[in-house]
Length: 179
Image (cartoon, rainbow, N blue to C red; front, side):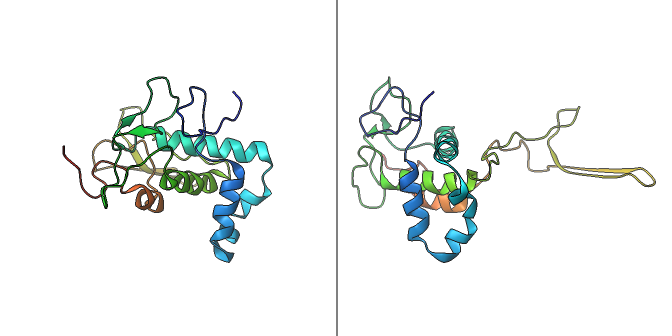
């Protein structure tokens, strides 16, 4: 599938919220430390940048976030644009693809630049329990396994900066508006 940026109309074939130029500008606007931290991004070619953006968009739309409002069209490929989506802080309408979604996508694309999974599959042992840590020693053979005590594992790695960017666009992000 070709790289298709959502233009705010609800495209049926879009797979990205931003383009590589937007992510370049986002990183450059943040200056020295951000550029150094995300040096891998600037070493990528256009197709690799677009692949990272698609992974970032997939993460945003993958179910971690319950966005306010409803999708604008049943035929659209992505979660945005939405109708009846209002920012919970000042009741502004979130039309097309809000800048917050674009910034979150840029942030996640920078994280994905090194090729790592944004939402890695959790590891389970043969009994079906979620493995939190596994240590093995080859010398006098020793194995240690620590299982999660927090119940079911999450399928999504948390990105606090992204959560903060999107907080006014998700249900439960700050407050839930009721009609």
